[in-house]
Image 1 (cartoon, rainbow, N blue to C red):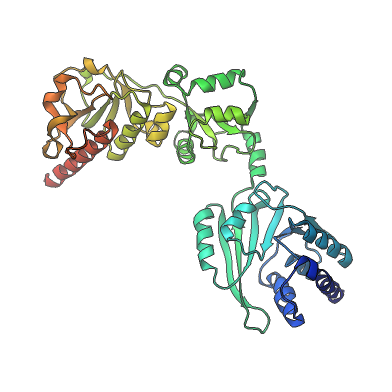
Image 2: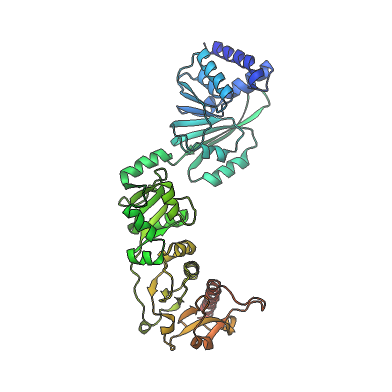
Length: 463
């Protein structure tokens, strides 16, 4: 029976090859070895799950030979070219193959028909193929690559790009029959679930709200969070950026209120708190909130109360950063520097933009959620007897400064600069004469670095 099926398949290939260019191998012995034998060898070298999709099958290889030798295997032959797909359908009918389905389309991540395995002889890079089958390959499903012997670089690139979702479970060299033709079978196993499964699970864990109108009250409240005033009034903030959002979910699950996606296809991660809402916005509404154009889901955070600081409380040991910046991006930049150099606390003066403004959050890299924040008085209300080191272009060289054990570091406001009374004890960062001044946030970063170095030197000198 199997020999007859191979013979019928061989003659079909011969008959249609001139018109469809199905194979460039014409010698009978070479066709047997390099097409048919090579196609069936993977079944002897690894376990083939079912249903199995032959990706980029072309004339039906390895899918049809594998089906002939393994009648119980369910096979999907994926071929986007219409004439070749028609040939495959004719071959399946002529050979009498049951549970073989021709998929007349290009396989992309949007293809979500579940399969337990994928096999391919295509020349496409492994990482691209693994991305391509994201929508259809089941969790713990396998992708079997039939490659030439020199594919080590491809394996490394695939693991570097997708090692969090796929693990390498087999890498084996072999020969075709008794020939000198070297081949290599490489098998990856999927660790995560496909998007459709993640969506179903998320629907069971979260309260889902679909929003398609600008008149929706919840959308109106979200849009107000794009301003500092709206953040302050609602005590909520919108965070963007995949890494920042994942860190917020891990560090502050109790403060994560809502996951915002464009439509239903980007569910909250499985480790998200169950009480979190899932807001599915129409594309145009999502774009209004995605002010940075990330095209990735957003997260609504509860903003914790920021306690007040008064000059009578004094400064904590170490550097206390005083921020008067009105530009939320500058605020975010200095918050990131404050986290990097380990300031004791950040005091947001009355002039300061809100640290949870969307621009501040994004520029800070999420540092606003981890720092000790306090609100302070206006810049002009700071008492002159505080141990404050200010930054000014006409101060003394910061390289020679001695930093107190507890002090405030103050930069001037954008444009206005420092009040005159702070200039007499200001520190200067030496720069080229042709440059008038550093950006305020950059100056703070340099000053914090100098303080950090100085603190390290002092510790090294102490007994």
